[in-house]
Image (tube, rainbow, N blue to C red; front, side):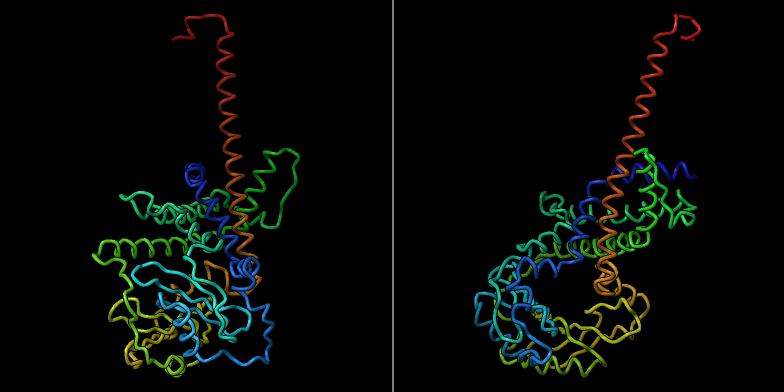
Length: 390
């Protein structure tokens, strides 16, 4: 049984070596996405240069912020808006260019009502490009016959990562005995094998979480893309503004906090198709430490601003609570810098497991080839005997 699982572990790891390495490497970087954005684009992604303090007044009126974006970019329409009230992180406003289906992004200072960047495509900035690469490997739309091959490969890779984690724990079923032990050895092959086992033991819990949640996200995205692609208007063109010019966004935000207890708005989704609602997403106080910042929502009529319905994650089934937790569990945001650091180290650990696994496989392959050559040479040196050909 162990021998069969070992073969499955070895050959599967070899088959998905490259995508696992690339996805793990980009994932370990993306754990600190905002920090990298603030470092690379300090004037746009971060408000640190503004030196806002805790005594700085709260965000300006949402009505005035929306008016600023619409006046600054009349050739675009707002698609969605991610906002914060920590005086540290800029708002991210996602725009759709009129006459197209193309999305763009700009940064906004919500305290000074100042646009901090020009519209750029969604995957223009480095970390956004890395995010796109992380779940598609830049393979989507390369072939017309398989437009979502990148998502499919990502799904297969995530499932393979789960299998590798499970088979690895079974093969080294007594791993708990060496959980805190790493014996040094001068022989590179022996030391590589021990480091591989030791890293796998420590990475396996998070590795399984990343594999499971990654498979869910890729499957969800793949099915959604296939569904949209199969419809006639799979990506509707933005022709005009799909919400009323006189909507009171401040009143909508205020109403959302009244409809759901302890609701903190974090994201505003504007209608992108005829008949769609205006939706306010946000977080709520809950005993679940992995509850996301988008766990609950309140919907409003895009023409009148009238309340339609709300969705409180605390009133949903265990299944929906678990699915909502996937976001925090996959990105490692749930415990601040501590969980981010652990998730980053696990990503690096998976890269090491890929490299060390390849080294061990090459060593076994080389040894087998060397043994075959020696046996062949040995037979050739023996005196001829008819029994040898029998």
